[in-house]
Image 1 (cartoon, one colour):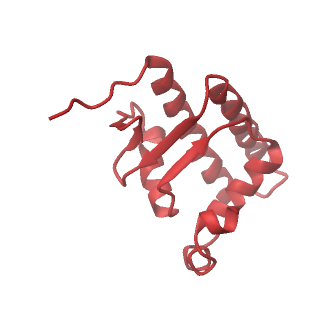
Image 2: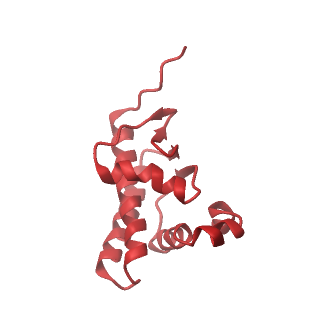
Length: 133
């Protein structure tokens, strides 16, 4: 039986910080109007995070309802916000999220808008990948 992959510390740090930023961004998008400063801060944080993460190359987060998976191994989330991310992504019909380049403010806003469409409408439109495409 093979051993699970062990991520380099920076990969784990980047994945957990991205999970936190994404979870906070989705929450903020649902709670605040577009002009609210809290939403602006959450979007700025996600833009910064995608820039910082992709400097070292792509980051691909897969999920099960209970955990995030990076390089074939589940991540232990040390806090409630990061631990919420896999369930949130699962509920939003996201199986994998790939960050390959820094995202602009407009791209993050479009992502959050796509992710927060109601479940029935999102599925009727073919899911997040079809909507995003």
